[in-house]
Amino acid sequence: YIDDYYGVNIVSGTGNGDDDNGHGTHVAGIIAARNNNLGTAGIAYNVQIMPVKAAMASGYLHQSDIAKAVLYAYENGAEVINMSFGGSFISIAVEEALENAYNSCVLVAAAGNDGACNNLACPTCDIVKVSYPAALPYVIGVMSTNADGSAVSSFSNYDHNPYNSIEYEVFAVGEQVFSTWPGNKYAM
Image 1: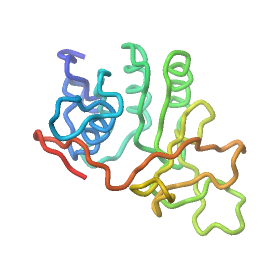
Image 2 (image 1 turned 60 degrees about the vertical axis):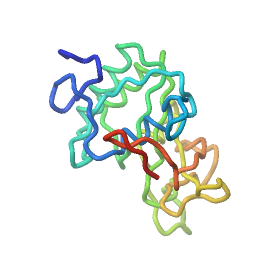
Image 3 (image 1 turned 120 degrees about the vertical axis):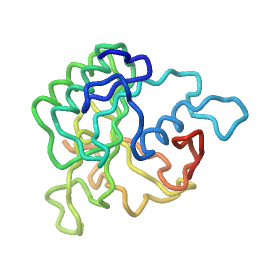
């Protein structure tokens, strides 16, 4: 990618990873906003971010773009790949890219926002759905909690049967999170 100093846009094939709707900027701030007495500080404020945009402005992602994005991050030295997206299926290309990246990267993905349990055979759950890539065994699947961490968010997909073959591993606060926003702003 030409001019990829500030990130890349896999969809357009350019060196411009600018955020279309705020989600990427918000997540990046939670992770790495500088500890400079302005706005907020990220949980790992001394790390560097490699913006790799795989989603269209609508938020839709093609499996081929996800695979390219994972490979780009992996091949360019990423140590952690955060994937705050998910879907009900995963392509062989994405699985292969993630398997390659797993050799040297920590892979983290959102469990999803459908309020669904991950046990496909559950007779008591209203909504049953598996979210990939979070459900893969070599990806750390992150479920959402309310602002004080005392309850699972109503929208969060969740791990109904721990230690089965479809697993989400950890919880993190996913509601009322103050972070960075495009245009040198902050939002909750």
